[in-house]
Image (cartoon, rainbow, N blue to C red; front, side, top):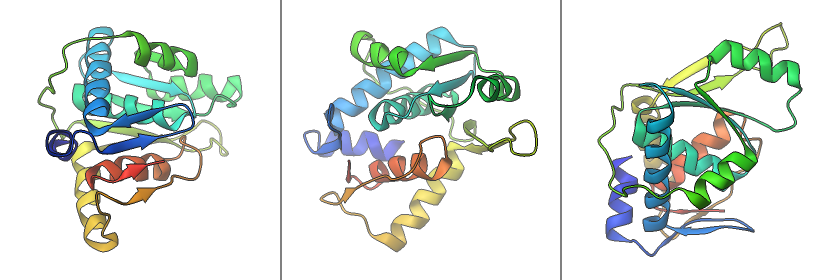
Length: 193
């Protein structure tokens, strides 16, 4: 996530993410992500696992970045997930903390911690993608931050996103591709809408 820190330093007022209800510059996004990361560090075990039951693009993105800065692992489920599926996913990943949309909204609005970006270990687990559970229990697929950043670099060479690019993310955030696309946007200094 060094690239996000770089963009926050070199183009702090550039628009990073915008939705109907939220608008953050790169500097504001970094500050919120680091604050949320500090909260996650204070509330979970080392390399803790978090489950976000949320579909708000801005909230999930800030929490994902907070996980990157705090060496935490996350998975995302839609709020519409049936309760038996939620329980199966909780059994599969064993989260230290499960946050609903409302929990995340309060966290982002209310918590203020130190705003310095901590060093993170890019080789630690970062993201847990969950299958639909169509064959029984959901299966977990894990990725490291390092593997995502390597993929960001390779993709950046092909699609040539620029700081003035605007990226829309389609699809449920409970799937890895929309979450990946959201974070790829910040690797390139573009704006996520």
